Amino acid sequence: MELEKLLNRSRIGEEEQAAVYRELEGRMSEVVNAAISTPPVQPAVAEKALGLLSNLAANSEVRKAELWASLGAAGRAAILLATTTPAQPAVDEKALSLLVHLTINSDVRKAELWASMGAAVRTAIATAAMTPAESAVANQALRLLVNLIASSDVRTAELWASLGASGRAAVITAATTSSEPAMAGRALGLLISLTFNSDVRKVELWATLGAAGRESLIVTATTAGEPEVAKLALILLII
Figure 1 (spheres, rainbow, N blue to C red):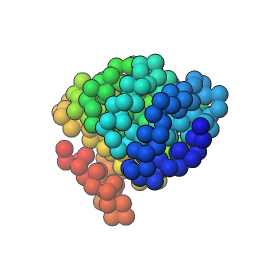
Figure 2 (tube, helix red, strand yellow):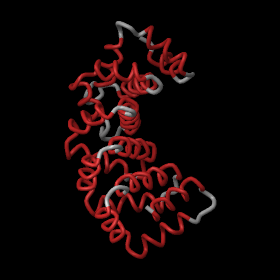
Figure 3 (cartoon, one colour):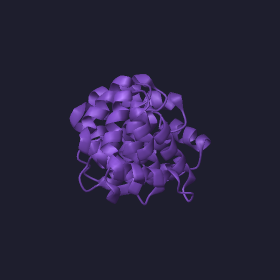
Figure 4 (tube, rainbow, N blue to C red):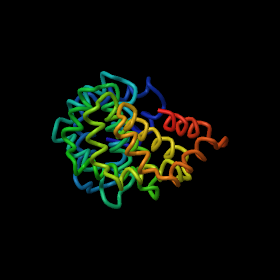
């Protein structure tokens, strides 16, 4: 199987993704097996397989559901393990992206993945989300966390607790000092999602911000150069 060609085709658009998916009928297990070897014996192969699965899941609810079922509990656990592979950020990024695409728009799959993660994996993914040295991984980790806590007060409260004071401080730092606008925006989005429906968490976050953090947030909210980031900072200030 030529993963490189299939991966490139899956990047073209929805029609080509559908065509690739049809061609892989009966052979999808080969892609899945390449994606979930733990640890990856061939990281470059795992990266391509994860990227291909992520692209195929991106634009089709039917394909998301079928890939979710094909992976099974063991496969999903292996993907979770791949999200925190030491010294293999490209594999981490693609694994996180796949989990985002598999769970978006499905509260059932979000709940299943959250339950299988456990506190230790949640903490590891949160740590990855606050690691600016690997901004591509951090962006995908932030996307996954925001996606998973959406529409669930229980998951939101559990993530708040998992982050702890130091983790929340790290999110604030990412939101107000990152040189990467996408990372800053996603960190702000996470803070909004974490505090939106809880006065208690709002008060705790306000205290964690402190005078310096609040000043940084105001500066971010009034910086014209990054309007989308500024908009999110304003939303966080007024919710």
